[in-house]
Length: 232
Image (cartoon, rainbow, N blue to C red):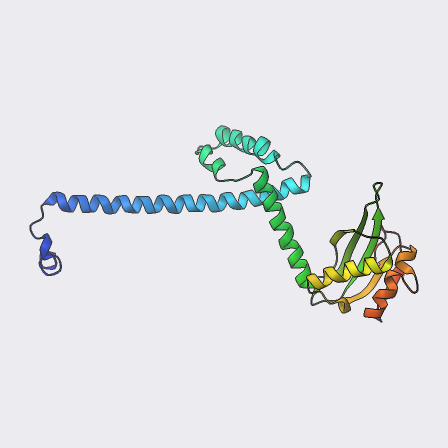
């Protein structure tokens, strides 16, 4: 070690023991700081994951998004203080559950689910069920469900989208709205092999009904008339 000091660090030959003690102290402190940052980073990652999972539970419950900060976090804090020997404040601070955080988490998860479903529909055959409903304030809403065979060879039904019909509820308007959404998500209309609607003229009209426009694009499409609660 003395030869190493003379050859590699000749400028340190005259340094006293305090110099080397300080080097050791600074090195150990640096390691502790790195470990602290690593620990905090892992805590934040786990907190972010918990934030997404709790946001999903809030979305499923239909409760206001403010419940995250007003009820859930205080409840978690009480449980930790009563039953777990740890720093509850640090854990609570690492789980963002503000109104805006919960809203953004729900939007991100919904977007991911939508993209996953659309990606699957781009490469597989499926059937659709369509219903147009008008509310008391004359607002018309188009609801579309899809049914397909998933990767496990199981028939699965999913809600695809709901959109307002801005102008009217004619067959051409409904078809254009559906077509535009399929173009937006790059889903070929030719992947639709069957379509179920109610018996409204706007849906089943021979010349100007929604199904008539669908047959122009997908000539071999199967069609059926059923109530909205029926399966395709």
